[in-house]
Image (cartoon, rainbow, N blue to C red):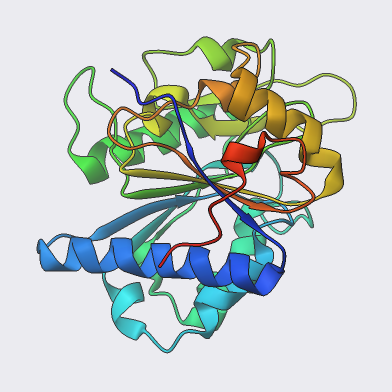
Length: 255
């Protein structure tokens, strides 16, 4: 049964939030290292996690990068050098500054004609890397997610078919208007992860954070991330967490 109640940590200072997130990352890596396994992570794009990636890249820990395989949570379909590309952002803020070995970086392929073809190619690469059988899903050690003001996470948006996907690990997401189409990992992948970490900042996120964490509204994609193995972890700044009940505002960091 999924563990529904998350671990919530609130921070008054960004530096404290980044310190705790980095400690959790390193602790999870050490656990994998001690078990003789590689550290398998899937990371999100956007602007919120950039300081976290920069903090990781500044660590003088080449042993981490040699033993880590990095995948993307989602990507906007189009040119890989587009200013909104998640892959480009990760290259600029983590992969290149950290000296991440190129063989350990597994981005979503954008050289296909359609988002659907891109999603299939990404799923095939996951199947090969994780040696998956029919009906199996990749199991990551650490997945970093965010929350949009509409409750979306990754590229799982309210009311889109991708939100109800139960058979595929990666799917295309067609969006209306001027929003670019996407490729995203799916809920079955997120819910099998060892650690799911939400990183959320800003006053504009306070209401949706309350609805996701406390009300657990099923129409909100982020509220449907319910890992099977460990409780999801929320790292929030004080503004994003200001509408949470007082009993959820006591945790201040990860030791």
